[in-house]
Length: 248
Image (tube, rainbow, N blue to C red; front, top):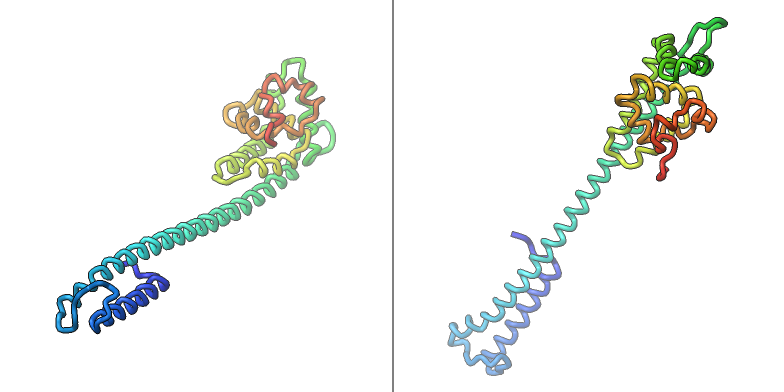
C-alpha cells in the first residue's frame, strides 16, 4: 500500500474534523447539511458520512498517484546517476589502459635498432633509414619496393605494426564518446617516417586487410607532409579521409 503524503494526510484530518463539526451541529438542531436526523437515529448519523467517505477516497487516490509519480521520478534520477557513475568509471579505466599502451608504443619506437652499412641506427633514425630503402627502390614499383623493405626489416616492423594496430583497435572497440580525440593523441606521436612506413604497409603489405580501414576511419595519415603524399602517390591508394576528416 502506498502511504499518503504528509500534506494529503493533514488535509484529510482537517476535512474529517470539519465534517464531524457539521454533523454534530445538525444533531443539535442546526442543519447546514440538510440532513434530518438526531442523536437517537444512529443510522442517519452513519449515512451522513457517506459523502465524506467518497471524498476522502478520492483524495487518497489522488495522493497515491502523486506519490507514485514522485517515487518514479526519483527512481529515474537514481538510475541516471548510477549510469553516469558507471560511464565515468568505464572512461577512467579506458584512459588508464590507453595511456599505458601509448607509453609502451613509445618505448617500442625508442627500442628499434637496425644495422646498415654504417653505424647502428636507433629509434627515429632507424625509421628514417627504412624509408630511405623504400624510397630508393621505387624503380621496381612501390609494391615490390615495400616487399623488399619489409623483408629486410621484418623483425622490427612486424612487431611495430602489430602493436600499433591493436592500440588503434582497442580505442575503436570502446563504447565511449570522443574516440577520435584519443586517436588524435596517438597520431600526434607519429613521426613523418613512421607515417610513410605505416601507409606503405597498409597500401602494399599486410595492413591492407584490417589496418587500412582504421587508417581511413581515423585519418591517421593527417599529419603526413604534402611532399610525401605526392612522392609516394598515397592519395591514389587511400580515401581522402585517411588524410583529413571533415569533423576533426
